[in-house]
Image (cartoon, rainbow, N blue to C red; front, side):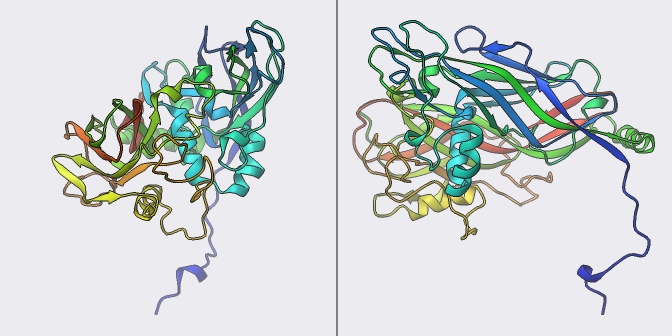
Length: 443
C-alpha cells in the first residue's frame, strides 16, 4: 500500500527559481479623454528586456469627471449621474507588438454588468466593488451614489471620482505570467473605447439635460517579474524547441453578436447570428428595448428585459439545442435560471449567492411584463469533451465549420417597440509566444 500523496514529504526539496518583482504602472498616452473627441484610450505596455508581466492583481484606475449640464437652468444636483467604471468602456482591444489585434471584446460594459450580476454576492458588491468602482451596492443600478454635474448651462467640470476595477479579458486574466519582454517590435497595447454618455450615465433630471463626462489619469497597475540568467536561458531553449507554434496558454474571452426584434412581433422569432470559434463554452443572450439603450433616463447596461418570451431554443448546425425548449414564466423560471448558472459553472455552488432576486425591482430574474427592468438572460451550455468532434485540448464545442446559427425565442405578446438582442459566446482562446518574438492568438 503506497503512502497517500497528502502525507508524502521530500528530504531533497527542489529549489525555487530566483526572481525579482516590482509594481509597474502603465499610463495612457494622453492625459484626458472624452467620448465626443478622443474616445480611444491607448495604454502601452512597455516591459523590461526578458521581463514577464503578472496580471493576476491588475487594477485599472481612472478619474471620472461629470460634465453633464442643463441647457435651461442647471444645478449640480439636477445634473448628477449614476454609473460605475465598467459602464464607461464600450470595447476592449489588445494589440501585439506588431500592432495586430489579438483580442477584441465588443459591448464590454454589457457583459461586465452581466458577470457582476451573476458572479457577485451582495456583501462583496457592497464592501468591495462599490467602494472601488462605484455603482450600486446591491445590483439595483438605481441605488448607486450620485456624482454631481455642472451647475451651469454649458458643459463644464462637475464633481469627480477616482474609480478602480479589474479588466475582464483573456489577455489580462492572470492565469499565467506573460513573457512580454521577449517580444520584438513595439510594446503591446490595450485600447479602451469610451461609451456614449447617454448609454453609460443615468442622469438625475433629464429635462433639458445633456449628459457628458471625461476621464483622466488612466492607469493600469501590474507586477513585472524578472528571473535569473539561468532561467532565461532555459526558457529561450524551450521557445526554440517549440518552433513556429511557440508556447501557449488557454484563457477565456467573449465574441459578441447583435440581432434585433422589430416592433409588433409575437410568437416564434428567428434571430440569425454567426460565431465560429474552435471552442465555444456557452452562449448568453440578453434583450434590451432599443429606445432604452441610448436613453440617459434608463439603466440599459445594469438592467435588461425579458421581452415576455415564454420559451427559447438555439439552432446550431441544423440541430435544435436543447432538444426541448426551455420554458420560462412568472411561475416557472427555475430551468431558465439553472441554464445561466450552468453556463457560469455555478449550478452546484449551493452556498454561492448572486445579485439576482425573485421579485425585487430591477434585480428580478424574470418578469412577463415585456419591457420591465430585470436581469433576464437566455443561456445555453456548449461544453463538449468529445475528442472526436474537438481534437484539441479545448473543452468547448467546435463551431469553426458551423455557418449561421439561430436564437429562437417565443414571444408571448406583441412587442411594443424594437428590441436589441446581444449574444455573447464564451470561448477558449489560445495565446502563443514564439522564439522570433511574436505573439498571436487562436480563437
